Image (cartoon, rainbow, N blue to C red; front, side):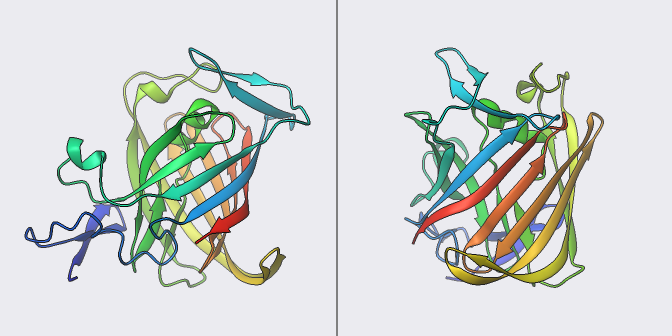
Length: 245
């Protein structure tokens, strides 16, 4: 299935097909990591700016912080869906792979999208409950080829609907410019054996401040670790716990 890569935002690229190509999975066939039906489960931990571990729970109207308990399960799963719905019903030109974020502390799931092709991988972060804070963070992203020193950038407008007095508030849109660099290559030990990985650093800057991402990427498993520094100095760390191809 022929396509060309066209600019999405900044240095990010997405597939563009001839108008006669209407296959609902046209943006999925070339995925090497995020294949339809695959799932990636991450354990996560939030810490305040002074290092205190906190958990959160969804409430009827919103969400709230809570003290950690032994019974808490802090994990979420990325599950890759087939087709383009429901987004293609709302956006006829929708051009991403559809995925779910399944939360261990919520019965429903979040639908969003990702881009994967030979030029780059780019994911929307989870953005429900506490994870709404991640709209101001560098989105998980990697650009190919994997070479130390490679850099790329893109930008997005974060609307005021993402503001929250628990981290920061604003009016209107905030332009968030995200830059990334591949810093190093190393071998790590993991439950999957020794992995050859790449260290990626991301920085997002806007009129409210700066947020950071330190990620460890593997060419078959994807992001095996992601450490985010949020706009208020708090942190979120995600560690890959399970993979189902």
